Length: 494
View: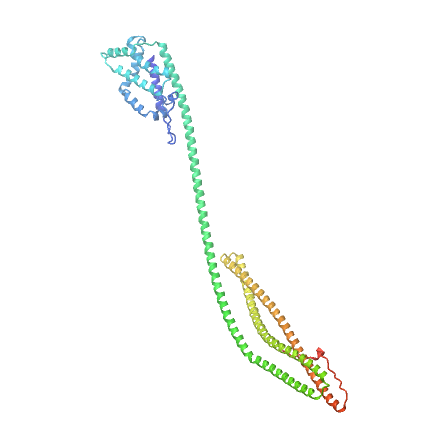
């Protein structure tokens, strides 16, 4: 009965080990040694892959300790013959010894897959060695077995142990199946995580490639923009150089004009000298008149004492004449200065007129350029509407040039307005100065006329005095007033 049960267990263990193949274990999972209660999952009787990884040397030992294939043919007949032996005899104690030795630790400590495997291997080896021994050596072995296991066990304890062993094998199979299920689920989860990691890695690679493409495109665009800006700055630099050359030419032209104005000033010097000579002649005439007046006064003092009052009046007239002479001298000096200022104003007026003409010509030229640029801009806009791309930059450049020319035109117009305002102001001041000079000339002529009339009245009075001395007629002195109507004075043109 016992060898038969052991044979059934060996057949089921061989079928499981031959039928079940170990599953491939992923490299990410490391083998973890189970506790004492869970060691039964890795028993070699279950045929699972965990037993092959945890105890690979035991498999080799099992293969070494197992009997050769030639002795395997005696298993059925030998076990059947051994099962017919008496149970409680001393000669059969060698059969119970292999079962007693492994069952003791199982009943006390719960057992382990490694101990069960070793016990089964020792049991098989002992049984095969007993079968292979000759009859003359068997009593000695039986004696030694009797010496080793003097304690005999009854049939009930053996059945209980076999039942416990079967229960342990069932539990071991259940644990092995649950472990395989968990292992499959963990493998699937690991493969899913690995697949997700690969997908995330591919996504990150695609994002990096797209970002690299975008950055390269941005750098290319910035380089193109910088090249375009450098080209525009070079064009502006060339335009500024051309404008500087134009301004230098204008400066040379203004210097030549200044030289011509200086020459004209030197040519006006003789005319100024002539006017001064005329003023000197007038002053000589005035001095001659003064001399004549003095002679007449000496004649009046020698003739009569009756004209003392007249002399006093004449003295007053002389004092007035001296004041008028001083005024006339001051007026002559102011007349000279005003004449010079008038000439300067005329020159400045002529220069401002020339500058205004030049500015008008420049404004006309700028307006013509603006019209041309507008026409070109309209053509370029039509080209842009048709879809020609290269003309866009030219249109922008022409638009900027048009704006710049508009600003220059506005500045020129403002300058022209300022110059016209200054010209009007200077003209007004010149007009006021001219009116002042004319007023001074009128006053001077009025004083001359007043002196002339007084001289005539004095001559008449002298004649009357001369006639009065002969006829003893009273002398009536009539001194005309200094009030002369302003309308009688005719001013000469400057």
